[in-house]
Image (cartoon, rainbow, N blue to C red; front, side, top):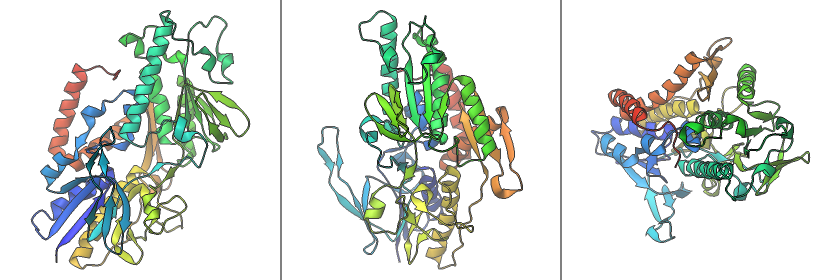
Amino acid sequence: MSEKIVVVGGGAGGLELVIRLAKKFKKNDAVEVTLIDCNPTHIWKPLLHEIATGSLNSNHDETSYLMLARKHRFSFVLGRVDGVHAEKRLLHLEAIQDDQGNSIVSERSVNYTRLVLSVGSLCNDFGTPGVEAHCLLLDSRVQAERFHQNFINELHRIHANDNGSSAGSLADKNVAGMADENNDNDQFDRLSVVIVGAGATGVELAADLHNVAKSLPEYGFNEFSSDRLRVLIVEAAPRILAQLPERISHSVTTELEKIGVQIRTNTMVSAIDANAVSTKSGERINADLVVWAAGIKAPAFIASSGLPVDRLGRVEVNTFLHVAENNSVFAIGDCCACPMKDGSMVPPRAQSAHQMASAAYKNIVATINGSSLKPFVYKDFGSLISLSEFSTVGNLMGNLMKGSVFIEGWLARMFYLSLYRMHQSAVHGFGTMLLIIVGDTIYKATRANIKLH
């Protein structure tokens, strides 16, 4: 009997799963492995904040799915899934249109015998008015590049004002409540960025913005420096990085405040308009750019397909990572709600997706071979938070031992950078990963450190 395994979503977990399955069944003509993604290229999601600031060029670090499909012998389908018909074992894909709205590829269906949903998560605006219209998100490469373009536009506008342009002043848009930081002789405009949400994305974006700002004078923005950049993180929880150990949160808070990042905890956002963020306490925080990085939810098509979901729209799976009473549909990563022994759910982290990909691979192979399945057990190996060139903070071992090992500085930075190299090794192979490191070194030596276009 022929098998068609379809994985929807080419993120870190989904892509690594597809490659492992393709290698496993490359000599078995009865098994076809297919990846479906709405983007033609892969970008490691933890890098999106660097694309947003310009410290990373997405065109250099992207990887073509078609190239990987050729290399590893799987099929790739470009398209956005908007429906799952579990009973018929069919996926429905939206039509593909160009920038002018002309249809390139019409709606279509893709059949499967085994399905793996690995579509990640989206930012959750919790119904807050104005988020969709006035906030920038960092869920995808397109959104990260949109923030980058807005950031560059603001820099050029301020630079023009510095040189006597009549473009107008931004001084009246300074963050409310921070005016005391100005002295009476301050004659320069400032760029105010408000980040709603103090998870890893928001925290790392704040640090990288300051890292880029301190280098701007080298690239022609002569009067701009990090003290003219105001970054404010607004968080509803009592502390930043609320899902991580308190020691990490405290250390990161100290480092962020040291470089000039403002932090407001216990602050809930009630609305956002074109010029400001309003809080439930009645405060109005003016800003030039607002980034929404708070909360997560699963893509809406999962719930609308009739699959069992939790309150965040994530598909509910059992410990074998497939939908109960439907062992043809698996789910991994942020888009699924998987229970742990203590009754809580597997946390939405990159390491969870990697571990789930490995477990799903083994269970899919076992299903095809008629073997028994093994339950997925999440292991917390710790967490690392990169504050750009300023610092890296984290803990190792997580719940694998009594008391995790707290690390920071160059050692933590080394571990953080190794995570991406491990992903590249899984996707391209160890030898190719080493060549990529050499290529990256040459690339950085011949290009600007910051993308300013």
